[in-house]
Length: 56
Image 1 (tube, helix red, strand yellow):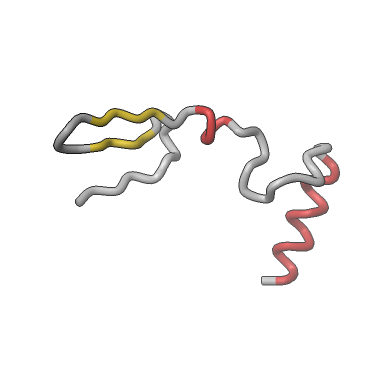
Image 2 (tube, rainbow, N blue to C red):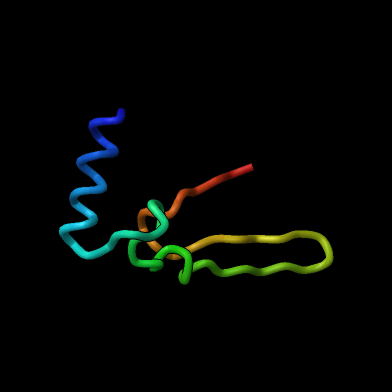
């Protein structure tokens, strides 16, 4: 695991994405979050293909 972290940090430094939040390189996912709510329910999601899908 430590080897992965070291190589990931080097890759981010090379792409000039370091320092920064490790899970937020471009901010694209964070800015794609949409919400909807009413008196009975709430929905939070993203239209990006790689966003996690949670069904309950």
